[in-house]
Image (tube, rainbow, N blue to C red; front, side, top):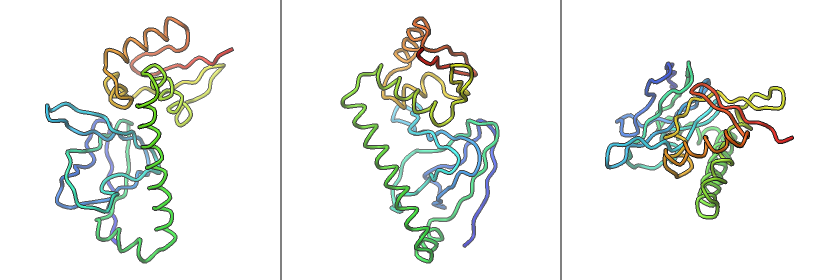
Length: 194
């Protein structure tokens, strides 16, 4: 099996989903955001990919979308396989196939949770849930606070929680006034409840 390594710097595009050479990517280092272009040409952030995640044509089906990945951390390294090579690898290694199936189940559960949040939670609750999940994955605890390196714009967060940029900005300002969080372009500080 032939794999290919890619290295990218912040802001570089890693993959285009409509490339001729369909590939599955494994993120070895860094953070990416998966972006889709809507019919009006606007970027919509669909997901944030972190070290250890799989992205690309992981459905093992043919299809077309205008998705691509953008490096949001300073340095990103990923390994990729052509789809046909990846399918052969899964056939030859049942343990890898099982791990892949578990990962797909996890992704499906995340998708179900996002759908349930959209259907049954208001935007304030979705916003706070998003920040809590982000903090649990990437937050750095410090003296009664959790500090997040902020690599997402308000528009990115709005896309991820199915809201608008204006609403996200209002929520940041509201929660800042209430002392729940503080933020700048480079970091978000979540205050722990006393």
